[in-house]
Length: 302
Image (cartoon, rainbow, N blue to C red; front, side, top):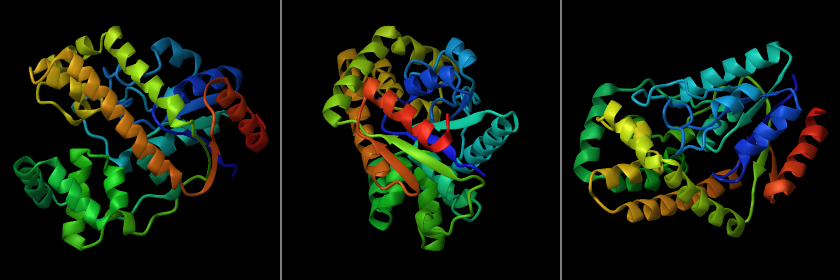
């Protein structure tokens, strides 16, 4: 079986635009590997393709959950593999696109054979999280498994699960054996210079605020006042702090910009060690389009 193409890279590097542009030229359908685009209503802060764009280029695993719902990496891989199989069966080419590195790693390398969750241990860890704070538990995980700490990406739900496994078994999730993936993958990672990317991240954050991110978060909080995990995403949690009176709108924007740059740095670190058949494309903009187009032609005959 031919390998499945994957387009990855740090946030803001142009993955979505490239996928839309190539999807209009080639028989591609996008399988989104983005942990926030799965949620309905999180549109502006995720730079989600519009419904019109998704009509022109089919996207899978976008708008599949309410923000109050959780999505484990195991379930995401199941959904992604089902989408890939469906696309292949219809004679189209699935293109996995996203920057959520642990989704792509689990899909392409296989899922760790972890023990089932223990609700009692997880509940104790959630209480500990409230008492000791996020930083203390992130530091604990970092000491035993920097790879898992990077994968968790400060997400409280994933942090609790990782520490639950560590405390129960003495082994971090990253060291468990993997089950074989269902498909083979070939990856292209966008790798623009940070001096090119970071000004674009700042401009994107300002545009998101101008386009109505605050209003979007207000609507979400009205529907989901309990602040589900989805509203901890970058951009959303910073606006929530502003709406709760913790700081000014200007400070919310500044925090958003700092957070998205820090996230991009973590993505560079993660994807620098991406296993498997990986090509790095150190360009952005039109050069990235030509490089990606040539790569698809070379390896997939598209």
